[in-house]
Length: 121
Length: 96
Length: 116
Picture 1 (spheres, rainbow over the protein chains, first blue to last red):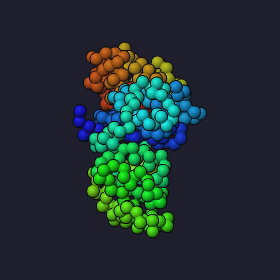
Picture 2: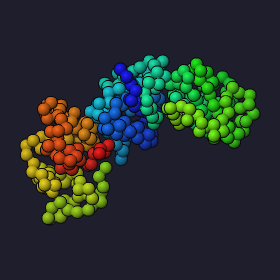
Picture 3: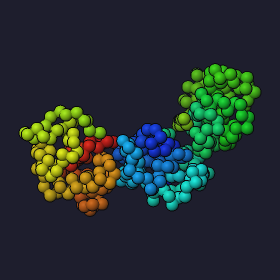
Picture 4: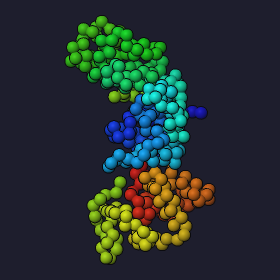
């Protein structure tokens, strides 16, 4: 499968810590709404956005989980998490939403390399 | 791919960058990232095969690291060199 | 994101506030009667086919807290109403112009983001 014109959005920030997560998801949704193929890579704190037990938003803030769940409606079904990011947070794959895929760390350079557009949030 | 890092060499952003660097990529250290000059054993100096590590001269100088820069394996670039680097690479990824 | 400022009223009694783009200022004002008024406001008459789609976007919003753009609207319609109706041509025939925007407006939802 060619990834020549596909976009990779890297999410590195936790819910509620800043606007970065929200902005990254928005960029992914806009690109998908315009017909682009988009994959998401969650690094570091970004993995916390995928925890399936997240409840409603902190006071005055929008919850993250409904948006994560919505990604598949935009045909964004590659939610990639390196094993080391899970390990660093003492998390198990079972704690993540069903759509998340754990990948080996040594696949990351090639993953980033093969996407023509890569954006960091 | 040109990776631009502006966080310290042992920051989470730096570790995330290093996990994605591929053979033939370039790394440009700016702002706090120039502290890597104080760590000869920093993993980034040998991140992958054929990776050149550049340091923004101005940021090293303003932080008192010009001497360290001369003794390192870093390639020093000025603002003009920075622009040239961004032109040489088709893709640029900022780690902040 | 809908504007919170009042621009005009939908009804003669001046009970239902609309923002400059015609979306409800108070989502809580919505009911089926209001939907009919909103539709009439853009010269649409709601049939059962329209209502099916209004329910699809309201369900989408209840689940994901956002009104859908075209791509997810087509997908959600396909899932709820089947292949025949889950097409942009079908949506365009019932809500000409921009189906996501018109549907969101008539369904009493905020304007869809990420949408033309």
